[in-house]
Amino acid sequence: MSLEKVFRRIDSDRDEYIQRCQELLRQPSVSGDREDVYRCAKMVRDMIMETGAQAELVPVEGEGNPVVYGKLLSLGAHRTITAYQMYDTQPVGELDKWTSPPFEAKILEGKIVARGAINSKGTLVAELMAIKALREVAGVPVNIVFTFDGEEEIGSWQLRRLLKEHPEKMLKAEAEWCPSTFSTAHRDTRIILGGKGCIDLQLVCDHSRGPIHSSCAPVVENPAWRLVWTLESMRGEDGRITIDGFYDNIKDPEPGDRELLEKLAEAGEEEKMKMQWGVKGFMHSLHGVNLIHAYMFEPTLTINGFQSGYVGPAAYTINPAWAKANMDIRLVPGMDADDVWDKVKAHLKRRGFTDVEVNLNGWKANAHRSPADTRIVAAHRAAIKDLSFNESLIYPMSGGTSPSMYYTAPPLRMVSASSGSDGMPPHFAHAPNEWIGVEEFITTVKMCTAFLWEYGNL
Image (cartoon, rainbow, N blue to C red; front, side, top):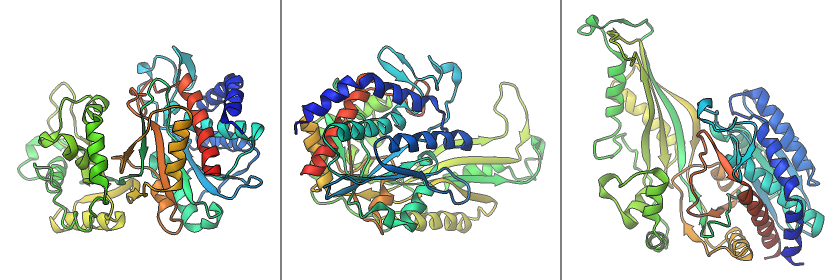
């Protein structure tokens, strides 16, 4: 069977697919709004069932958002993969910055503008429409377990519990599949083999009193200063993290990674990084292979925000009652999130910051990494070739975090790899005016179709 026949079906049904994408985007699903998230979860469940699969909402333990679980068992299929996507989103932010309301999913100049369009409801619908098209024309040549996540933005705790406590529900799947977006205007492609782990934490210094006059400064502790000193104790001016034992157990890059980094440098990765982040240069004058190595293989400790007291235009001379700082720690292979968490708490105690409380407020997960010589990588390569995109650059790691580590870790020990167009312009995930191009969405449907076909027939 030629994939062209399935692609023709996708082209003929494209308006229907676009409408389905818009329908899901019009249902808000900001992670912290439980009622909206549940409504969205039910929509996702029903869309999975429309592909011929079984689907259900996994009961939530404690507070949280449900995983939408499903399974599609195809006659004659000998291999099983797990499909991952997220259906929760970030908040919309400043409404007056949006050119179109964030939950109307209007098409403006060929772009569907909505919260969640690129991250990642658009790709979720693309996966399902690909399965629908394949099933109607040729049959789906691989068994698929669906694990669609309603908590990606806040740590994926319900997903983690499901995978750890009920590995049998994954039906011995051998790989986790999480596609990204493809664009015919950007035919360079990338395949990513892994990602950093992450710990999201908040430091709080609260002296349990109201704000008082700043004249008391000689005799009353200032929580803002206490927290500033706490932060200063955790990282040096040279960027070195000074938490005792922080760098213990870090693994060296895999054999062959240096060659991959050299290829990325030759392909202009440094300039892509500058364009992506809107910067002119990098810390410590890093460039080339050393820059890419630092981005992928060095752990980080980042202040996300600091809040205390008063910062208005007029003078307001107070000694504030409290100070808070949100932070994240990015982990590389070899580091254990529980071990690093314990080291942070021990550091505060050892340095005398007993009035500073540390709270987990999101991720606590390890890095993950899969080999390049796997069936999932081969299927990505073949699908990319089927649609006449350029041969992929291989990224051994990304600097970000995803739930893939829950699939690659024990007890499941799956392999994982993701692919997408390289060098695409900003799509404003987590910002106003998030979008996915209509043509990008349809192209992604076709790429998902090709991937499933290739995976089942390799």
